[in-house]
Amino acid sequence: MATREQVIGLWQTCFHDNESFVRLFFDHVYNPAYLRSYEREGRLLSMLQILPYTFMAWGSEFDCSYIAGVATAPQERNKGHMRKLLNRTLQELGDKGTALSLLIPAEPWLFDYYAHSGFATVCHTLETSLEPPDTMPHGYRECKIPADKQHKLYDKLCRKRDATVLHMRPDYYIILADLRLSGGHVHAIAAPDGLLCALAFVITEPDRVVVKEYVTMSATATAALTFCLKERYGSRRIVCNRPALTGTPRAMIRITHVPTILEQWAATHPEAVVNVTVDDELIPRNNGIWHIANGRVSQPTHSEADVVRLSVNGLAEFIFGQTNEGSCHIAPTLPYVTLMLD
Image (cartoon, rainbow, N blue to C red; front, side):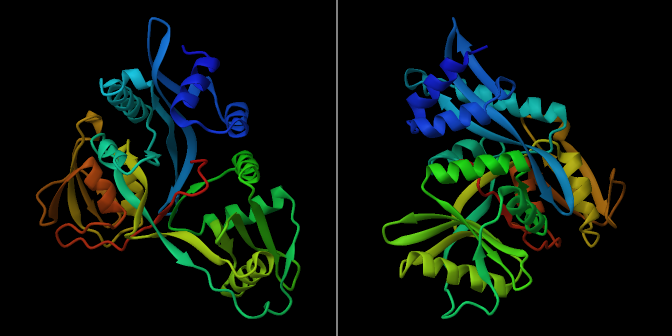
């Protein structure tokens, strides 16, 4: 097993992060149990980390592994080390019953690379401008709120989304520490009754204010939040990258345990009547045909239902409503993959 010093060395060779971030990650996130590596004669050649998260979709929570720190020593690239390591890791996750894995490609060309291992680009963002009102809504004000109370609101509002990565309290503290390292701030708004109603995670650039993420209780709370940002940062444009059906590719999702995902998806789509055939070259237990009808998954018999033949990539696109197959038209689900220390 590679040592911590070897892992940090390869990390810095590939990513060149500032020392403050490296200390934050390796003191508070890194765990040798999460490391998957390819080594030869005591040398660390390729590595990745599988960080445990919870992904919520269709009213249910799933075990999810966030694949991070994907790195190969420069002199060992283009030899297939990472492909073998990644595929072996995905097989391991499937065997353990982990429902999903996700990652955020560091470069545009990597979207095609990861697609060959079954990842689908179902997370896009569009940069939108947040337009503040001329005045602060009556009774609203910016406030200072302890991190634990911030997290309580953040978690509550994230759980109202159709699909999202959840950030538990320890992870939330790390997010705040990373934000501070970037010179960023959390802005909180209190409603007229004194209760917290909005949060924004903000970093500044010379000509604009970038909202990395925000959550609000209402349209009025959103107006109060944007007015607060205008008061704080002046005339700079306020922008935020929000999930969208099309736009800039953001993150990729890989289904690693098909039955778990299909059962919950079917339960929340009782209108769907379809036979789904899945082909997964890496995880054989994901291969099969399932009959979906009346909110249930069963083995198909003679049926008039459409037969939809999908790769494992195509299955992710289908269940998130980003492709329509046959007569089964599914409303899009936009996954939020935000504040991921990428």
